[in-house]
Length: 516
Image (cartoon, rainbow, N blue to C red):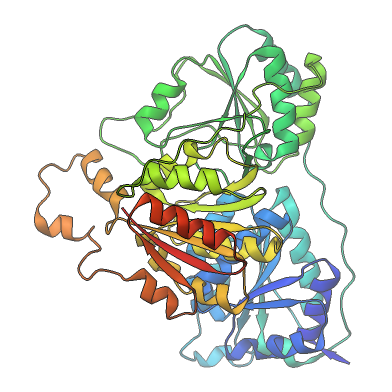
């Protein structure tokens, strides 16, 4: 006989869940023991729950199927919520297994007792508490299906400890995978009419519409109609680089985005929502599309965007080959001098390995790095979808677990890296092929900009000190080496070029502190 934990784990494995990013506690020890008894599940230990949930996000974005997390009670789930928020915005499939006290122990209100169900509902599209040891496996099968609904969402299964250790009848049957909602014939015709109108039109792309199969179809539509292809400011995953269809990126700052969109008379949404300002600012708009712009929602996030684009292409009788193919073109590497964002971008573009995976949490510097790398070797680029910082390093961990044969490049701001710095330890423990570039400007630089944009004038030393990271200086080389990551520091373009080339040519974790 199997206990409930073993039955659940076997059910998840049968359903194709192969990795568990974990930070377990006492209530989850039966699941820890079960991993020894069930072949097919790779456990990955994180030293903070936010690393586990962020890694599950990176894995799901690249593998296009769920990983599991194993979290300790309500407080453990709460520690991982910020990166579950990002994953939710990214449309990433994740199955959270959250332990709880044994059912008979809950009435005693032990110190770690909390509203696990309430916490779970804050960041999950599906939540279920098992009823018994036998029900635990069945709930696991349902969780996998729920995680794959709408192309990816968060499913959280709460497992009382007694259901994990009591005997069960064994694993549950794997359930059929859900099907994606299709665009209607009516909305396809509306989009086709918009493209035939002759008015300035954009196809606004997000989610899986930014993967190569859908982009190729969008490029064919652009060839036939002259429509502009635009993407969300922070896509979950974008396949870009030489030989792929070019897409314009909506600017980050609201007034710049509104100016970018001002001439469009029609916008066709594919895998995205209508563009809005990231934050509210005094006297500046929240809704970014022009008032006289007509919006057609061809395929909402979570729908079958590829089939919708193919149907639109068929309605327009478009050519077989796409337009706007990105040529191979990288900026020249500046002559040796002080390192700055342009120098970093040029070096990264020139040294980018083919089929690299980029985790971009470079913040202000990322606004330069992204356009610099447009014509680099073909690669995948992942971004901070939900705006909750501390995503970049864990996201790189998950991507490297999902794609062990691809180089992962984490472009990481110094301030946000400190939120989930424990991810460096997991990179070493799992011998992941990740090169991390810490872009160190000693500041929450984006917040210095935002301080001015919200109307604060003549900020004083106390206010400015709250955005400063130089007292004390964070020594990233020592910090990373203390967790086993071979590390170097670069202050010039030439140093950065030589160090990045060396890191890319070696398999395994490396870190470069780039001082700007």
